Every structure is written in structure tokens, then in C-alpha cells.
Amino acid sequence: MLLPTSLVGSYAQPDWLIDKEKLKGRFPPRVRATELWRVDPAYLEEAFDDATLLAIRDQERAGLDIITDGEMRRESYSNRFATALEGVDLDNPGVALDRSGEPNPVPRVTGKIRRKHAVETRDVEFLRAHTDRMIKITVPGPFTMAQQAQNDFYKHEAEMAQDYAVAVNAEIKDLFAAGADIVQIDEPYMQARPEKAREYGLAALETAFDGVEGRTALHICFGYAALIHERPQGYNFLPELAGSPVQQISIETAQSKLDCSVLESLTGKTVILGVLDLSTHDIETPEEVAARIRRALPHIAPERLVIAPDCGLKYLPREVAFGKMKAMADGAAIVRGELA
Image (cartoon, rainbow, N blue to C red; front, side):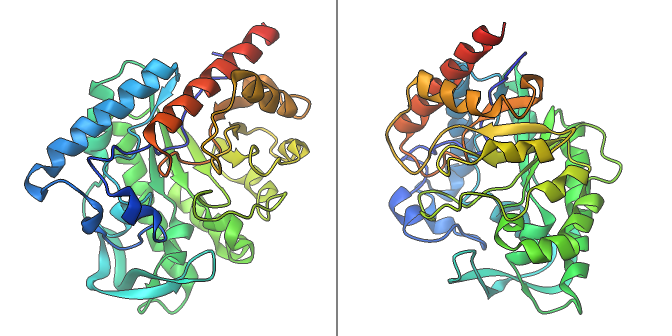
């Protein structure tokens, strides 16, 4: 399909599942934050399943073509995977500066990073069992996890990123084997710390995708709009990804009013085009979404576009998230009709 639609990853979690006031009052958790869940631990897995079903049905009702699990089981996009790895002292967290420059509790690395077991395969199996549309699952990227950790073991940070990449590589292969059509890694810290990304982040990407057979994506962003309000007008790190092994690159264009000529630097890549401004609860009209899509067309063939929000919908009220998602699908349909 021309201009297929998809979430970046997360959808708004139900209020009965997670305490959104506590969630938005802090930076995204890097260590476990089980106090955010409203459901008794004995019933939490069932609640995750129910919330995931709601997220799937909302995406289908809105008309999305590629369905995610909405990341209903996660306190943040990264901590569920990052804290499931060997080599991390979960009882004694470390501290690292968040992308805003503020200290945040993070996993403390005290040994070699290894993946002990598959983390998200049941998530994919559940998603695959409950929709007949294409499905995508997300996993945190190795460079970002290395930036969200206190290194008390490795001599060089690059070595730690490589071991994170080996763990991600094994997870990606298991996710495809479990039925995923697309696996996306989230690497927001490549934008936040471009010098280190150039130094060793690209090498970690190569390792993460080594031997992977399947459609791969990478999300690079300016951070959750609900928490980081200032947006630069351009990316610090984007053209460098043109030579990476990833097939699809997810970027923001709506809130930042990004100059879409930068898309010309991503030769050969499919672009997941962010067209929903998540800094506001105002719901775009389909025509507003269509206009944002048209801005990209002088710079990239429509066959190389997937239409998505700027970032995850996690911090929005559910009715706002659904409204924006529906407007996105309808706006894509407008442009699809024009192109046809």
C-alpha cells in the first residue's frame, strides 16, 4: 500500500493500568518503576493483555495499516529490556545525566552485559494472535542503553555498547522468529549525543543488525514532547544513518516543522514520517496531516514513506491519542487518493 500508517511504538496506556500523574512527573524510568502500575501484581499480566487488546483494536478502528502492541507492558520504552540483562545490579542503581542534563537513576553495569533470555517474544506472539494486519515491535537500541547506564565494569564505553548490541541482535532475531513483520530499535540518544554516536554508535548498529533477516527500522527523535518542550529545527545526527544497515528511519517533522530537504540525504531508506505534533492535545484535522505529508513529497518518493506520529503517544490522554491517530490515517488517505 502507498503511504501505509503506523504508530512509532507506544500508545496511550489506560488510566486503570498506569498512574499517569506519577508518570508525567518524572523522566522516563531507566530502572524498574513498578510503583507506576495501578493493578495488583497478581493480576498485572492479565491487565497487560487486556490493555494490549484495547490498543490493537483502537489502532484497527482508526484505520492503521501496521499495528504495534502499544508498549502496554512497559514503564518506559527502554527499561523493561535494559533491566532484564545479565551484568546489571538492579538492587543498587547508578546515576546518569538524562538528555536534558538532569540526573536520573539508571542501571548500574557491574559485569559483562549478556541477554539471559528472550524478553519480548510473548509480546509479539500475543500481537500476532490478535490482528491480521502487519505488526511491528520495538526494542531499545544499544547506543541509547549504553547512555542510560552507569558503567562500573567496562574500560571503554564502546565495549559496553557492543555487548548491548549483541544482546539486541539476539532479541531481534527471536522477535522475527516469533512472527514480527517489522522490528524497530529506538535510538533517541543518537540525536542527543551525536559525537559519541559517530564514534561508536554506528558500529553498535552494525552489530545489532548483523545477520538479521527481516524488515528493520530505527527511531531517532528529540525526546517526548510532554517532557522536552524545546525542539531544534534540524537533526544533529541523521545523514550518517544513510550508510547503516537499517531499512526504515523514523523521524519527527510536525512539531519542529523540520525542513524536509534533509530526507534527500537518506538515499535508499524508507522514511517513517512523523506528522503528528505531540506537544499539544489539539487534534489535527486530516487536511493538516495531509499538508504535512505533502511537505515531504518534493524530497522523497511516496513509495518510500510510512506515515506515523512524531514519537510515541504514551503521554497523551487516550481520547486525544485516538483522535490524532484517526486524523493521521484519514490524512494519509487524502494524499494517497491524490497520488492515485
